[in-house]
Length: 606
Image (tube, rainbow, N blue to C red):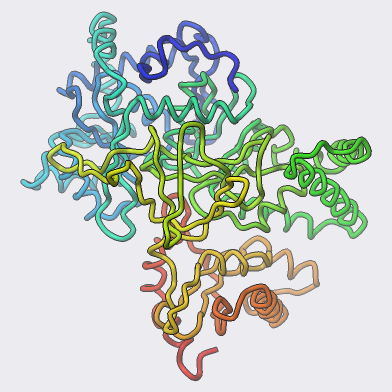
């Protein structure tokens, strides 16, 4: 639990502006927000006192545009300081900041613009400006004003620099104070539009109260250093980064390091050596692949030493997982393994000082969790939805089960319906989706339960184990239900297989598309003296075949893969196969590779 917190009022009455004032008063000289220049130079840092000053300046600037209390303001920017500060500034006006995914399709942008009734949108640069400009001329869209952040990219629209200059000129401490003190805990702090992979995005309104209540509950199960650093790289349109990158840092008075390019996350970790790190499963998979590739290049003697240290670390983690105190001998062996082998290796990635690591968003492959346990890193898998303000269940350092997503936070309830669907209830569960007219379409049943759409089970100790999304379950032609995530994660246990999609709805057997890991495959080939494109090497293809055979041996007959196709190009958000939070867009992949999937069901399919 954070030890430095002073709550200005009772938790039920707290707002983000009240917490920001607390930070400026109690921790004003401590770092709050850091970012790198576009050229990759050194860090620029604002203290909490400076953050609050910038918030007041920008609030006056946005106020000069006529932004009013209660209205949504749309933003399409990466993880940059203008985004972070604008979010807080709009909140101090009582307005509702809403981030739109940078990868959103034109139809989704138009839908959100209509649904939100926003008159102002803040966009990053020329590329975003050109995507939003047509909406200004659309009579069905209320949008009136674009603010463009990048210098020189505004064209005929308002520039962020000019808006800030106006705010500096008009800023009034009295007006700023009056505006935020009128905000109540039950007022919306944001509206999150779900990613909309299967239709128009839905609007989830979240209040100051539920954000603070969730932050308090999380803080009770997580022990972190005071003013801990956070590497902020996931999109702010996702509830995970809104909580981790904005709301929790304000609540904890911690230090946010903005990472505008997800490709630079590993380099940022090496630079900062953070005490905490959050990654969605794909991030942990990629980091594990990088470490595996590096280990494969070590001489055999060093690899043997690492493997022995890994075994000791896993034994130590297993003891903690059982709730047992490690023996003196095991504790000593683990300390020696960390000091002499594991920490020197982890320091190369900037991970040797980690005390809290976590994941969420999708089922975490168990082999990845066990891989990191071999370095003494227990990835605390969590689960939740936008509709539950993010985290609903989580593992904690004092109570965890590898492969599960933990137990409900304090004050929250869950149960499993007859068909396996997870139902949740509690103060941080939203009431319903926001309609375009501002009313709420209730989503809870008569007893206050929300049907999450996820399938899972609860073990005898109260830990939740995810199976899959209900709508993504495969139903074969024989009527058998199969979790594609279970099969995909089993296939990905072999390091050569970086990504997998399982297909088979309405068919008598399953097929798969497999993608070689772009880091491990070259290292695997080089370690065996093989030259050339790994995808074209018979030895690599034979190893993939053995990997599929080994996975099938661990699956029941219905879950086994009968045929597959090996692909070489990695899937990503930029090419549309992954969401911005790095989850599979199954429909996109099935549509894009439909001919290949069909061929796997033909008699000649291979």
